[in-house]
Length: 167
Image 1 (cartoon, rainbow, N blue to C red):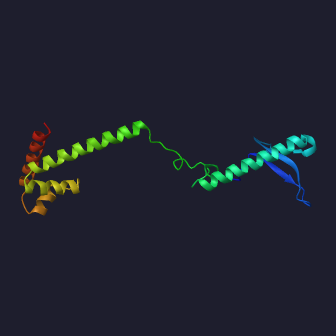
Image 2 (tube, rainbow, N blue to C red):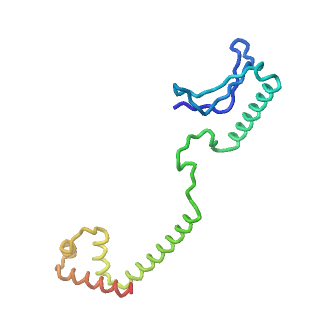
Image 3 (cartoon, one colour):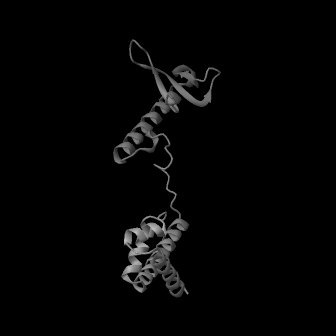
């Protein structure tokens, strides 16, 4: 995709390099999909308006150069890339983020309190389940070298302790 021009530009004589006309670009496209423009010579505009337009173009170019020099990124030179120039962080975003942090810290405190209530064996067996939720009680019993009924009893005790702590 070619970059479309906007505003004005000068037309120069190929032999003398003298400015002979001003070209105004339109946002509209012609039938072939090319950007429309109009060309006005010095005679058509009159000397005053022709010189005025040239001065305006010089001032605009100087301002653009100054802005590009003093800015790490010139927005005029970027094509919109979405998130690179958008800031979606609203006051509601910050409020939600703060609430989530508070909830997460409350959950962390709850988990710590709950783990303190468990015995070392209960914590170890629960850890098997937390690391691999698909592991069966039978597999935990095999890893622990104990019976399935003891593992089932441990998880029943863990559930009871959880209910006490969360109540």
